[in-house]
Structure formats: structure tokens, C-alpha cells
Length: 251
View 1 (cartoon, rainbow, N blue to C red):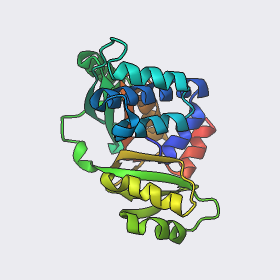
View 2 (view 1 turned 180 degrees about the horizontal axis):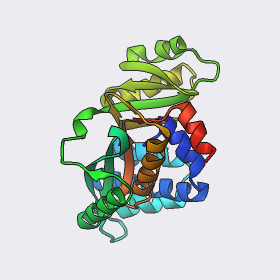
View 3 (view 1 turned 90 degrees about the vertical axis):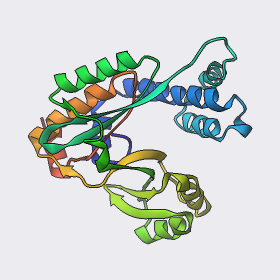
């Protein structure tokens, strides 16, 4: 799941840092290539590319890699970059649901690999629409609590179109319409509030709390999907409590 849940914390502890870093770089490079292909290599005239480059730099992707991705995406190297966006839907343990977001240059390969990862790890491939209705596309900014109160965050983002501010462990999450995400980030910056991530994500309308056995199965399933090269993001309505998390860490 992308960035904003207790699941993300668990995965961060579980995964090998180098492997996570390489996968994160690959995702960011793909986003740069897609943005450059769609709107050209000039950052000043291509807001989507400018944003993709900002995110890559924030994650410490080397400048040489960024420059090569821009040129490759814009067709300046003679290579053809042609990615398709596809979303697959799946069911996991104990009624959990997953949306799998892919960016691929080979739809058949992506479909086959995602299906195998789901079925071999205890999940079920779901019919189109049978899972997606549980999620809404939202702008989501995650920021560390530090000395902040919920009111501090609300004051900074309310006029920018924020719909909700909620606690999530040691963080606050700010939800908005995707079109208001940049304004929300600007509001935080003007207030001098540091944030960790700002993404457009699929956010579940309600969550399913998993027991320890289901959580083990779910994490194995989610990790197997996320390891695939064509997978950009995995979103879920799974909620793993602090107590269950502690039990898993003692395994």
C-alpha cells in the first residue's frame, strides 16, 4: 500500500532497504518518462514532468538518471517509451480488497505476472469493478506529528480545499480532491509545516481490520505483488492494529 498506513510501516521494517530503494527509483524514473513523453522535455512547460522530477529528487534519485529519463521519454535518444496504465482488482484474506496499479510496456506480461502473484499467495483475482467501488481517488499528504496538533494542520490547509485531517500513528494525513493537492501542499509550506509525502492515491471508504493470521497472509500477498517490476502501487482497505503488528514482529 502506498505510503500512509500502518502497513507501510511494517513493510518498511520487513523489506531489504536496498531492494526498496531500487524499486522506488524505478517507479519514479517511469513516471518521469511518461510525463516527458506526454508533454515534452521542458520542465517549465510541462507541470507533470516538473512534479515527477521534484519527487525523484526528494527521494535522492541521481541527477544523471533523471536527465536520461527525461531524454528517453521525450524521444531524444531514439528510444521509444510507451507505457500503459492498468489497474487490477483482487481479494485478500478476511475480506480485504486490493487495487494494483501497473505501468507497463507489455500488457500481457503484466496481466500474467499479477495474476500469478495473487493466486500463488492466497488471493483471488476479482472481476473489474467489484473492488474499485470501495475506493476513491484522493490527494493525500502525510506529515509527522512532531509538536503539531490537528488544529495546527487544519488551519494551514482548510482554505486550500482540504476535506479531512486525521491521525495515523505518528503522522497526520490530509485528504483532498486530487485537483487541490498542490494547493494543500502550498498551504503547509506557507505555514512552515514539513510533510513527508504528497501523492494522488486510491483511499478506501472503509477499512477491514485483520487478525494476526490474516495479516501474515495479507503481507505475504501484498509483498509478492509489489515486487513485480510493472507494479507502481498497491492500495488496500486492510488495517493492521498495533497489537497485531507487535505479534507479527515477534514471529
